[in-house]
Image (cartoon, rainbow, N blue to C red):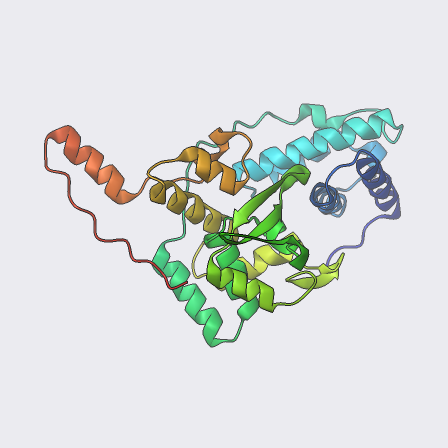
Length: 291
């Protein structure tokens, strides 16, 4: 059971959320900031106007976040406490003392095809069609958990080549992702409305989508690593076209795509063989899944 939220913290967080909405921040950003601040408020021992650097450092030091999550949280806290000081909720900005965290080096970790296929089979056996579709949207189409959560029948598009999906990404940015014939049939069969209905604005929350994806795959694999698989597969199937991979992943800065693309073992082996003067081994034929 979650710890109760202090009424003072609740009011300050509500006021900050109104500020974010007024600033036209995306719904996903607003939801994430509320969740992050609520998590902080339930675990810190003082009210907002009494938070000092020592309190904040003890809190962040107790969390087992990944490097990128830590960077995101710190940025959120800096923004929140800057607003709180400017708005008169506190006299100091304790987030100024948060250390700078270097970005993690690219370390793509795509879900292996056999692991993904086994997860699909298990979901099919237990009749969990929702998990099947979510996994395919992440693995075969590169959607983030937040993008899966808000996918809607109104986002389906048809042209002379087939069906595509209008994806609502970070920062209100949208992109068009072509759908495989099978995915198009399954999404159209879900009917009108959000593909994954829930209690948060009519759809599941991104957190819940992430939980479903994580629980559907054995081992340490997550929904985000299904996106690593998509980026890697696109990179390989286009003979190393980073621009296409980045565009389909929704990256404005193509350097971000390096975190999603892992060179195939066959490509690495071919490079070593070529450098050493050996004949390049012929890779096995790529097995295509049924549409």
